Image: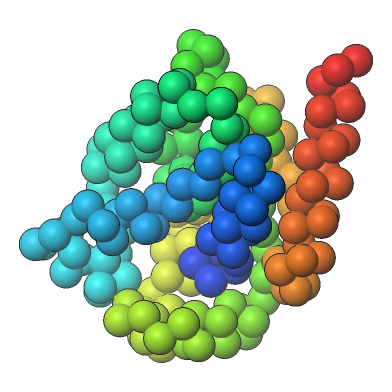
Length: 185
């Protein structure tokens, strides 16, 4: 599994789509899963810029992981983990051998670039006040994940998400090649 992390609008989904063009990868966007599967109060919360609770997200991811054991393609997952609790679940699954992690790529981009990208998407949940709330939640809930993962000996590769999508993709592919060479030793 390849994991793409970063704030909404940094380009995780674009990278996921670029991976699927290769034919060797199956892309899963947790955000897309959430928008497809959730209704009622959960959907209202999403439109207000709130995150689903950890258990709901883990159930979605667990379902994808269990189904992926039947495909030959490596999964590229974006938007997970988003909290330390989810990261704890992920590390447990890795340690138990239920998930084979190839790498985690953390895409970074400036607030200005991300805001511009989000506003250009035109989605219902991409309004200035919601975007500000996302940045706040990202800093308090998602950024601490990197510290937790590193403390659990899981490397995170930082990628400059301000670059154009093709440059970002080449940077990820280059890092993946290095990972594979190092793991072959």
